[in-house]
Length: 187
Image (cartoon, rainbow, N blue to C red; front, side):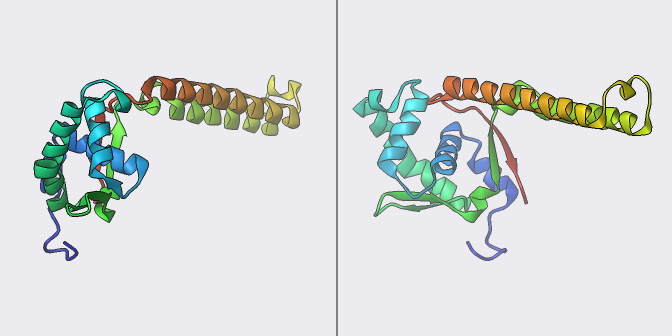
C-alpha cells in the first residue's frame, strides 16, 4: 500500500474505524507505541469493553477479544492502511497513515474547560493593559510597566497552575477508563 493509487480512501479509513473495538486498537497503539503483541492488546481491549482492569480480565473475555481482533478487526485495519499486523509473530504496529488519524478523547481535558480561551482572553487583557500603560491612560498610570508585567506573569502562572491541577485530576479519573472518541483524519 505504498503507492498513492492503492492507498485506501478517506471513506475506507472512516469505515474501518467506525467500530469501537477498532478505535480502541488504534488508541492503544498510538498511546503506547508499538509494536505490541496481540495478547497484550486483547487484554487491554477486553478490560475497556468489560469496564475492568487488565489483571481482572477473565480468560474467556480475553480469548473472545483475541479471536475477534485476529480474525476480523486487525485485518480490516491493515487493509485500511493504518496498521501492520504480522499474524505469525502476533505483533501489531501503526503505520504512517495512522499518525494522521487524530483520535481525541471525547472526554479530553481540553474539552471539559476551555483553557485555550482563558489563555487567549488573558493575553488580550494583558496586551490591552500594557498598551494602556505605554500610552499613559489613567488609571493604568498608577502602576509602572514593570509592575503590570509582574501582574501579567503572575496571572499566567495562576492559570497554568490551575490548568495543571485540572489535568492531573482528569488523568486520575481517566486512568484505565475506556476511551470515548472523536475522530478526525488529516489528509
